[in-house]
Amino acid sequence: MLIWIIQTGEPIQIDKGLPRPMRGINLSNFLRDKNHEVRFLTANFNHAKKKHRSEKLFSQVIIDKKLTLNLINSPGYKKTIGLARIFDHLIL
Image 1 (cartoon, rainbow, N blue to C red):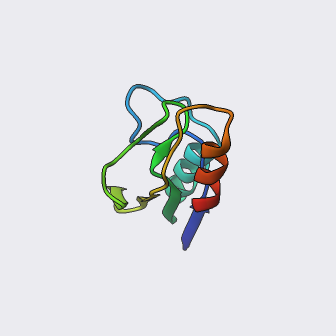
Image 2 (image 1 turned 90 degrees about the vertical axis):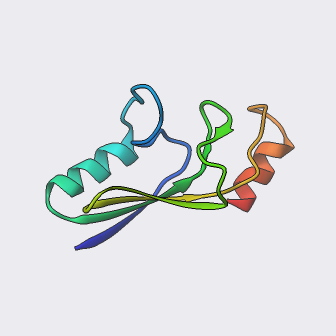
Image 3 (image 1 turned 45 degrees about the vertical axis):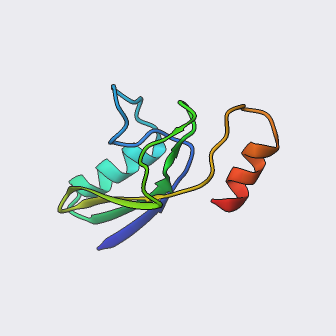
């Protein structure tokens, strides 16, 4: 079965270091292990590090034949509180 997961603001499998697995990573890995095909739709902007994961407007990262990450671009922001963050979420 093809399953789409839409989640933003959490670490994903391609983030550098060892990102702490949250709902998105845990759910996508669980479904993949159950032999489902998973498409993970998330933001290109890494909210924890406040920078973009990729320079491309839209990126598709194929982890393996069962898991694909689709990164949607947004303008990003530098401060946790402010209009830029609201604007980023509206665009996304």
